[in-house]
Length: 465
Ligand code: ARG
Image (cartoon, rainbow, N blue to C red):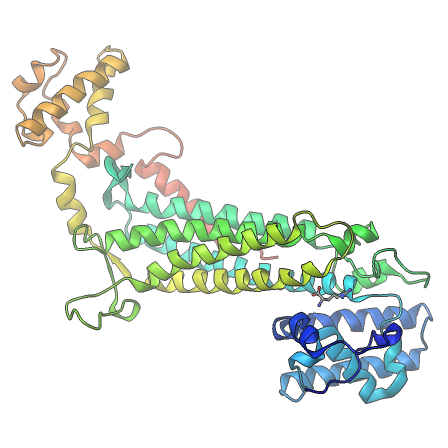
């Protein structure tokens, strides 16, 4: 396929082979950056005119043409096929086609190396904003459920073995807290990423009297990346970001796993509406929690992106290396996957019902309150370790007899410790168990209510980045 001469081809006697061009072309994926690329170019060209590296008239013509190019791209009128190499060259070539040699002045004092770093940092800011918005949306759905199911008690698990009764609200609010840290991680990442790399040029800076601070201000950055070699060669902002996405995905995946378990017939704790489940092509009775499973599965994809970016960057000598072109694939995929998963998760949750009666049923028949019995003995003066052992023996005895603790008699209990009296039976009720909790952050009704009040306020006018 014939292609026009690359813009960088001055020193070459031979054209780039078609095979090599096809192999190295990145436009298929970096065309997503067209808005950022043009925004960066406009700020750059305004600065070039302001410091008189180009004339005001030249600046005006370039800006106007760049805006037209945006419309051409959005209307699908600009050829962005692989022969164009990358989005930067495609736009610059079109600019020169439109306004002639003056278009060639746009690239004064910059290189594609600082240009791509700029585009990525701009894209990152938008991605962080979108993800934070979706995190808050999910937190709000969780808070809604925490209020709706207030005082519903569920078995709390450790090792997926029944442990102690907790409020279902407490369970939901645990995820609200996790998501809050995810939100903060994104804010932290933004803080470090929000510096302008443009003006570093290829790696050494430029002899043109450019004003980097002016460009930084125009584009909403909190300053410039100080060292020009650092500016073009690091991708730590992507590593941090994809790591933050991975943590979001871990949280979603754990919750997804719980929904899969809870909606199984064995648990029957949750029912996901038909609209968010799928059937089987062979087994007519099936109703599968595919959306939750896909969130769990896509988590692996985001971890893959993290591994990819880490491996791409490892051992690269300073400054720019073409390897870094590969960074956009894991970056974009992490953004899209995390965004889609956060989005669907809010919807899945809105369409999930938690089966109060099933919880109640389960709570009747087990040893969830054994810890309360041990604490009871401690209050009677028995050291905790001993109380633990006595209670353990009672549990073993009851299990042998195929009875729950509340089906034992006082006589049975007294056989293990003379400290037992009738009031111990109150403790066997899971409601009493949660109500007796006193520690800050516990599942007591007061503490759970405090969390609800806190999050209602905190999520009301949450400031996004
Ligand atoms: N497409 C390139 C990338 O994404 C842009 C920078 C190219 N720079 C270069 N010196 N070839 O990394």
